[in-house]
Image (cartoon, rainbow, N blue to C red):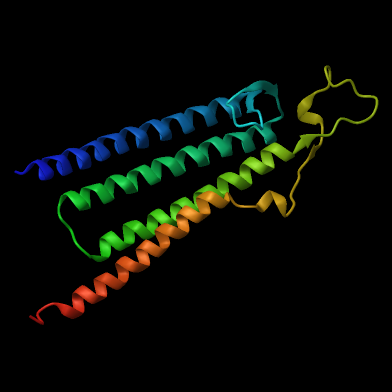
Length: 193
């Protein structure tokens, strides 16, 4: 085996092992964080500056479920993407050229990144922009949070996608289209020479 071949095998093996670790860890983290969030009563709410800082906030069950959905959807999207990348690496390792399974895997990657990131963004926006309504004359420190109404902010802005991730999904969609065309070209040219 040449040095280039050994490097290729080592790289694909690293992607496969790393992808499986990311897949399992992100799924486990998402499930654990979502379970702890739903059980509550406090939820770790991240700050808006994307620094990772935040604070524990006591929330009613409905808002805890939305926060749990954000974590679970995000982690499961990462797990599925990692699994699809492992599958792509496995196919590259076997030397598969333009076949329908490769195109389907890249298409699934595009759909997962696009739909998953959009659903995570919707859930995050809903969690970020919804709040408990405290009526006049009620002391917030002694109020039963479960009995207070929630102001759900369902607006057009809530439905805005994560544009960079949607762009990546479009790139993978274009790549899947190119692979589909290459499959047809390969099938059409077989046996011509």
